Image (cartoon, rainbow, N blue to C red; front, side):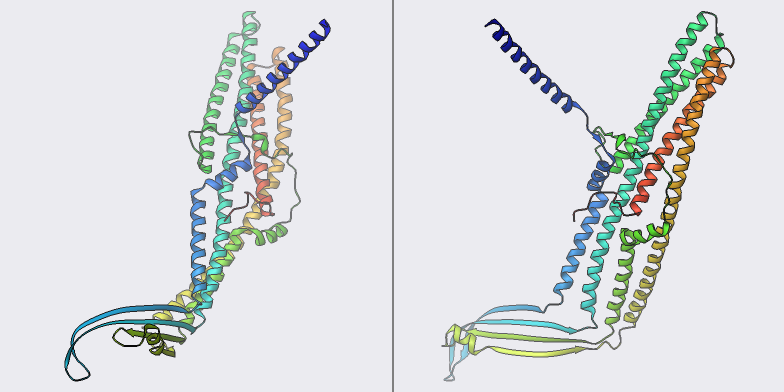
Length: 453
């Protein structure tokens, strides 16, 4: 019986322990600060951007214009009604004066239909469709521009955090050397001048750490501004969300990437739609030089309460109908129409040149992006070799210094070279990451999530 009681007590204690452990883990998880990945920062920034909100608002305006262009193809229908009450003396049927009071109602329904006006209505509808498509592409380009700015700010912040990590490592190393030097100076092994040099090295490490912390603060503000993030709220980034792949040289075809970019990049599509819209606007202005034809029809009736017939019979018997055609020929209007046509033609040609310039600009951007990616991979390889040799040089000089074969200046120089080599590796790797992301973007990988229109 005693063993069973002990066994039950142990089981109860185990259950209590597991419960406490679960609660503790839950509180720890709750207390952990959220760290933002690069993609989360980009998606948040695009969603919160006021520039993006304005662009989406312009898209709604384009939709309203398109709806109006569709409705302009339908007939214009209008109706009217009037009520007239007259009273006073008038001459009756027996040629005598009589008092009269008359209530009259008039009703009219009319319709107008544009049969032909130089295809301006059709071309206006096509123009509005193209303008809407152009607006959607402008939205994509705006989102991509925001994403690029956020990505650059994110990498700058990651670089600043890397600088702090390297500075802290150097500061800790300088403190250890100072302690070792103080003991050696007390024992008379090293002169006081070496102690001063180590203290100066420590002060420089502290200065570098403070400077890099300030760089991080500036980079953090820049990232928050790019994201339109609340400046008073904390923002921590997940540096590990960046590409951890080792940079490598790439055999990329600029022509293939350019062919893909011509189909996918929104700025190319927007420039093409702008040219098509300008051409349609030219067609619209030319259509104003042609005669226009229209058709119209009306129905009208009236009712007098002085007549003996009922309201329904009067409305039916007094019903009038009309139908007709109209033509309008522009003869002379101060040549303003011809000037408008000329201006729209020049605007179309300018839009075509802008489209060609966009293609040239995209090709140059891709060419430079590919070259920068290859250069970043090569620079990373050289930086790694430099870091390895600098590490070996520092370790060798440290041993030589302990043996009295080199001065403290030589040791500090090798220490600074090692720190600079680590900075070069960090910079080269982050530069490779951002260049790789841009090349992948030109190859069709999106920078941000799908926009909801």
